[in-house]
Length: 344
Image (cartoon, helix red, strand yellow):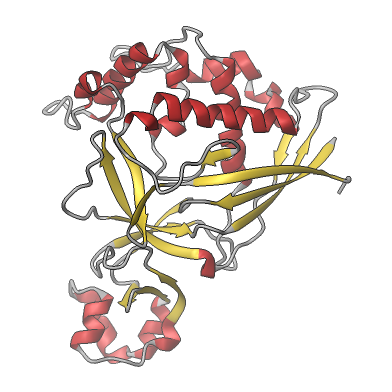
């Protein structure tokens, strides 16, 4: 068994959600900051008005303003800056970042391990003609079969010998609130703000994991740390060549090398191996048709216009971004480093 420190540096905002939302009744928007409140402490702060507040449709921000209530400071759990001034509205809801029992944000080891798994699989299947896309008459997907072919069944998988801890706890001071921004192939942004907001780790945040690899015995993991870094770099290169470089979008900084696209809001192409399964033109056709089927309905079989992706030449046809201080950037980019250490 070999042991490693794994260090991530957040380069653009990272969101790993817990499935919960911070509603308009749970936060106060005040001077470019989002103050997340404890509902029990809110009740203690203004017990006579609290029932009326919960019964009406006002946001917490508006209710406090209209009723001239200022004694709410004791109800604030934590506070975060808005990443891009004016982008968050007091009626928005915010996707919450995953937190430990102490209320501190962290990244599960499974999130990083899943990305490494996808990066390795992306390289191993390059050019192999697997049809992983569902057929309308066949609800069964072959994605699991591809993984079993390359890594073994779950009970025998080589990934049983790659162990990654959850990250060390971070601080709520590492969080910012980001608005989702969609970029079209032509590089345009929507004229109206989207409703999706997320708690994200701010650029510059350092994240630490522990990793162990068993190289011998049953289900031995055949790759060392340098191999893992190579797979990650190749996957990032494929993502650039096959997908993001086909958008008329110039990022403020161009990141290559040992980078990964982590968490939610990073987009379909950075979480799948589909572009590596086929020649690029064929991949665009298959992805476009599959997305049209997955997200369509009987009345609107292609409600998101994915069939047009074939003509556009890239699928999906939206690049997932956000803004920080007026600068548009891709979501979820981290720099990774892996260093071998003595046995724990």
